[in-house]
Length: 636
Image 1 (cartoon, rainbow, N blue to C red):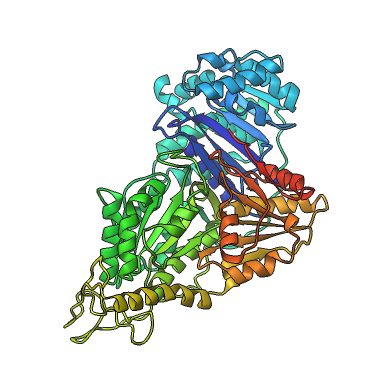
Image 2 (tube, rainbow, N blue to C red):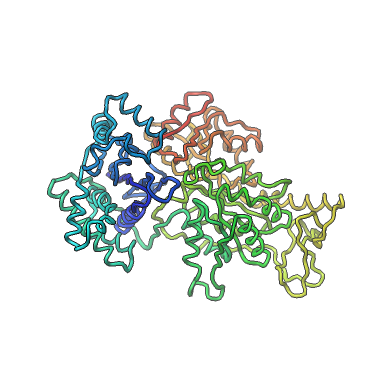
């Protein structure tokens, strides 16, 4: 087979993320394409988390996929969360000591989840123990069981390493990791490379983990456990990156010239700033430019305000946040709008409203980004669909902000932020830095002089012999406060015309990108649904359905002409929206700008990602209907 799919489950804080990083890196070093996605509760330690890993020999997977080949877990709770996700032939690796654990005796499972699992098992005639859930997985789903005595393995590790058993328990997460590696034919040497990359310079930890792996491999070899046959990887030349969505945005900002980043810690945005903090000193990369100043502020209001201040001095600046933090930034965003400040807000969406689902994903903040702020002022809104786009858009956001002298909002989401992939280093050949209309100022400089058009040459605070005024009030060309009606009309009109200029200059085919030319149906979407849609199209093509996907990358200024041109090729009943929202948002935006009505939607608001198979099934159901909504819910 060309692909292996893993689901690794365990309690938060038990090293599950480390295990997935080691597994992903080991396969990446061998030349495979790797996709790894993490789901977790909003607590520091103890609650259930899981990671899905896809390893492909031919191409990079772009979305999570159902039907795992291996479900490998640390604890009993993970069995109860995932036993019903087993497919025919799925191998479930678990601790044999947990077989008698009862669902009712696991306090960390939420009451609603417990009742749902109880109902399923009891309806099908199984008791509510781990053994009952595993029997269901075998008899109803076709799974295969691979029990291991985790305590016995750790005792052998303690003996071999000469450490107490309680210290050997820190290697617990390596047991399901090693079993997963063995099942897919990964060698111990390859696994060692993964550990060495993860624990650079910490040889004791590498060796301890390799003792565990060797013991597990030995047990499985003795028992003659059958291994999967994953195809050898297609030959890959050159270097590669193993990066999360947060990481690739940070890399894009470095390349794009960002030299000031502010933030207040919030999930899932904070990891981007942590990556930048770890690389503030650019060393010999840009010695003449200095490093990056990454500043953790006391709140989100201070974060955007300081980024605005940095932008006024000429530094390329940005701030990074999520929904609740963005809400706090909105008044300052309006200040940036009326003062034509080129500031970028990197906005990672999650489940709302309020604190909502702080560690789960969503796309319900689209209108919040588009219409944020009282009054009207121009802003550009970008939305990235994958890691490559996120890198490009991090640079593009800064270019557009300075070129048109306005705020730019770069929309991402938790799904993209917490996905790790192997990609080739993005090409720098086409990277262009556009700083817009700059001037040295002078005694007669007027910051908001509109005599030559809506975009005034921008002098920087501190320019020699240059005085300028910035205020939150309406102002005249010098920046002084005035409420004169003619001046108000002039200044407000000029600001808003910037969006018209951007609409004329940014190619619409770049703002709404068409994938495929199938005439049977068209899916429309934005953000990280891209990967699931493209894979769903492949699945449906195998069943004889020919579809296409219109992917929106710029939502303001909205690509109205492109939208009309593509959507009118299809009958109304053949256009389907896919979105992470409880009500269709992109459909409303299309109606607002074009008058066209999208009659079919596939929606998901569980906080979990859209999976390729569930999406393909929903599309197929809608093809025979004139209109309607399909609601998705797969995922623990």
